[in-house]
Image (cartoon, rainbow, N blue to C red; front, side, top):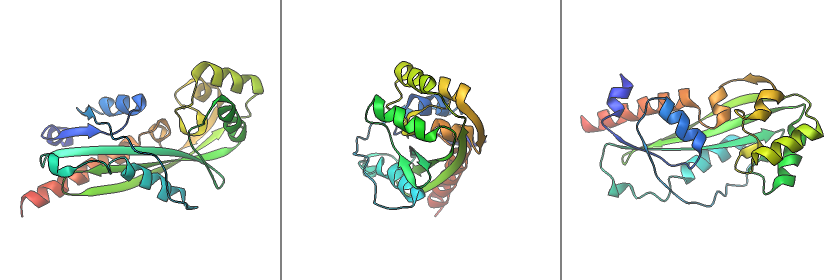
Length: 204
């Protein structure tokens, strides 16, 4: 079983997100937090998939892999919200958060997570998309959510697992956990691939 194989590895999650920490722990994976402070600037491109994948790889860029043993795994994820052709990043303040939620209200948007899993030998990157539709939110509902939950650390200015998700989301097409910030099924598949890659390298 993959969990048994993963016990042979030292696993680092390069994310401060408590939601990602919770989801990874719920998967039964033992890990430690590794801080890699980077300025999250992305290429000027119209393709949001490129942006999400680039940002996930960027989080691992400060790591000197030569300092770590072979059986080490690094996980990095970055989640963006896309409405039409516009990427909604983390709001700068509460006014911008409310403006983002007004834009999302009554519309369908796409949540894209870029995910990178790396060892000292090899790095693999992929992504997952999920479509989310909000009902029409009132001014009072938006104001209450922003004032109460302070979603300034969240792309698109909302957390699907919070009050706004409970009262405002009409439908989700795709992975719920991707909208939370960590596409767990994709991560499982990528961890399996990473372990196989390491086994192949070791057998040469």
